[in-house]
Image 1 (cartoon, rainbow, N blue to C red):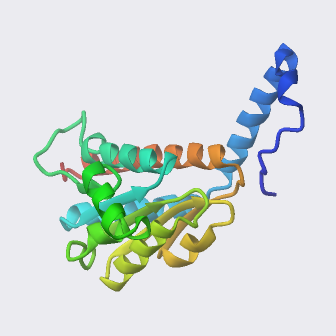
Image 2 (spheres, rainbow, N blue to C red):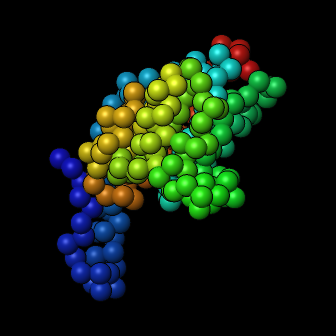
Image 3 (cartoon, helix red, strand yellow):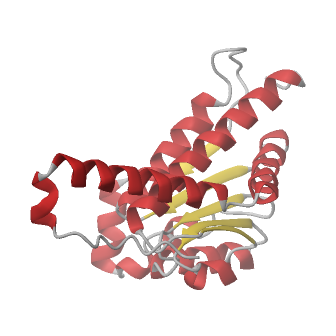
Length: 213
């Protein structure tokens, strides 16, 4: 059953400690349900895709809008540093870049072309066969993410989606996709962060155990 995230109580009633506690409890309970609904094999599959990219010196590009842009940047930080620290710091790192971080470049493409192509333009003549392109979109319908994913597919890249709310267009565009079973924006984004940390920790352990870092 999809979690709609609707709050039945009137906001003004939150002045009651009991109602506030009930809201917090409901939020956490629904978050647990959303996390439990993610197929473990999907998480492992995406982690292994990233593991192979690391071993093969392929590039990883991550993108998103709004809160998902923050998730994308956080994911890149974790892949770049968190996967190799603190157990065995190494010269070999993930070749990873967030397409939502360069504000001058993003505004230039938005101003001169259009926002719908702001991520695709950054991938042109850069992304290649075997690279990994990750799109984060809670709704699954962010046009600029879809455009970039479709272009990456045409270049032979491995595309991954993190979405919710039924998956939207991203579910069909990405080669691998995790769809969080919730219609609530905040909870979908919460789960995306949790998944990013699970994958980062999985990779950190795996890389150190087999001695690649």
